[in-house]
Image (cartoon, rainbow, N blue to C red; front, side, top):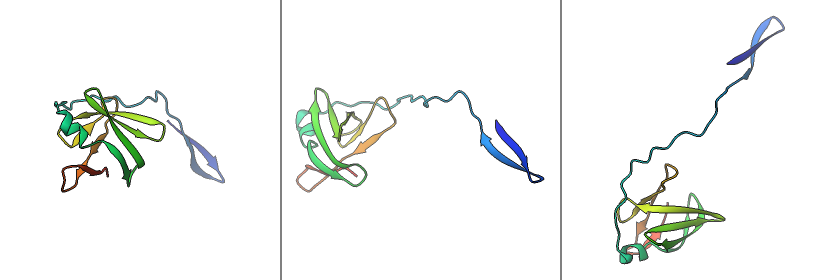
Length: 106
C-alpha cells in the first residue's frame, strides 16, 4: 500500500506500507554426497576469502564447519569441492592447488 500526500498542488508518494513480512522459505533440493576423510582433509585449514575475509574450515562428523568470525556454517558436500548449507541457499566452492589441497574459497 502506498501513502500519497498532496503538497503544493501536486501528489507525492510519501511512504510504502507493507504487511506480512517474513523470511523467504528455503526448500533445499540439493543432494548430499558421501566423501572420504582424505577428501575432507584436503579442504580443511585457514583461508583468505575475497568475499568473507579470514575463514577457518574444520571437519565435523560427516560434514565441514566453516567459521567466519563468530559465525559457523555447517557445510554439506554436493561434490568433492562444492558444499551447501541446509538452512540457507548458500554454496561454497573450494579451489584446489596442483597438490590437490584447497587453496582458497572465493
